[in-house]
Length: 297
Image (cartoon, rainbow, N blue to C red; front, side, top):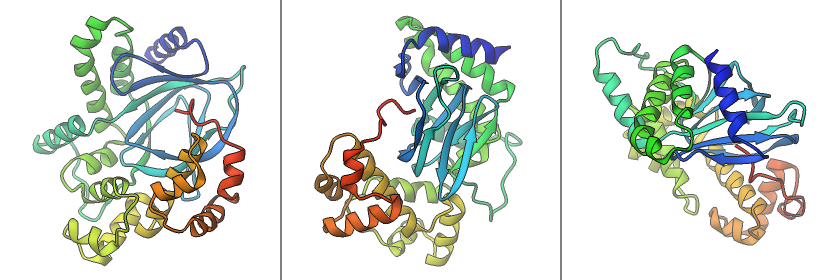
């Protein structure tokens, strides 16, 4: 019943294709009525909940399809391919995207870890993946409904927006994706910190030894834990992150040379070779057939 109310609220407020701001920072409604093939994007820490239609994300060759039965939780920045290949006027994609605020998620994660019995402690060797699908449990559904019921009233949003968003975060941390989210934001978040460092230093050469040293791990242990969390080796991840960011920049109008420099490539020819190897198109071919990424959640 609560999920139907959520769907009704979104349908009422979203009148056209694309993204619709809610007034609550980081909470965006969306509607997609045209099929969009999977294209390179970078998912930032976000939760995406679908109430109509289905969405697709591909991480290192593995496909995640999620709809109104499961929401997607991306706890760390990840280079993926995402699209809505089955969206149509008769079956639109409809949902909400919630950015995960690092400060609040960290506060909640640490507070939960300090509370005896609040969560199941993972085994020391476990490193949950940064991308997870979670069932809509009652706590998540009720918290999301309460958040969206704030509507567009500036006073309600100012007074209650933060607390209701915090309630939703807590539901996520306790739900099926909670272990992944807690590992990214709580104690033992070394891999998440490494990913954040890579994301903010795209234009620099960062070695595995540097990353491992920063988090106090041996190269071998860091490599193993990194691959467990992202499904990719650190080198493969770094390359995918750079190329996906470049593809997004080119799609938004940046020239090929500018995009290459922005993500740390000194040689445009090397950038073009690696881009084509990754996506099957040269950067210029990609530029000429720009993908409509602006309205993608």
